[in-house]
Image (cartoon, rainbow, N blue to C red; front, top):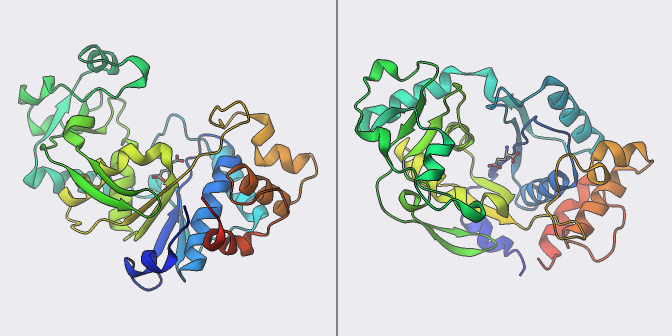
Length: 305
Ligand code: GLU
């Protein structure tokens, strides 16, 4: 498979805006570097721009030291954003306003179900996602309860398919009502969920192109639906790229010492060495060789993916 850059450009405005959106819940690792290669590579190949968005909606797991380290490592790697960094925690009212907007024309309701309650309502074995069974939908909790801590918040998701053409994987069809059911937008601890925060941001920041790992493919239909419900009729273009695997076949984790950018740096690797190693692990080049951040667009146009 190869990127058809002309076909992709035809679906995008001139100077399209994409984003690099790490969560400050750990240090940068080679999986992030692969994502950065695709994000910056596509942005540069298409004459576009990269917004750096720090996704710190999860206030329990986000830590300032990870935030600072992400910025420092990106600078060391020489992946320079055209805008940002912006943080989700900078503007909390944005998400409250979005809930109010949703609640104008959609059913938003308080929900007290735990993950366990939901898992018990379906087949949660083997990591299956169990759609929300709707228990709290009919409780008619008054609107004044919406922003009360201790109670989560959901929005009703109507049945129906979302179709989109992934620039690498082709046509996709997802019915969010069957995948996740009514979508959790704020959890019981009072934190905005990933699905809600990322969609609100992609809408308000006018993101044209979303480039991320294939582990998030199943999230895309619901994000397109939620964006529509928030008033964005035309979704961004999505690209879901392959994930890095360790030789053992497992997904890389943020805690793996052998793949952390900091560890590689401490062991004497240069920034181009680290980028080249990530590119090789992702199959973008046959053998590791030093690659500068400013040259990653050449990988994207040429590589067999
Ligand atoms: N913040 C997410 C992560 O670090 C990425 C979200 C996205 O690209 O949609 O996995």
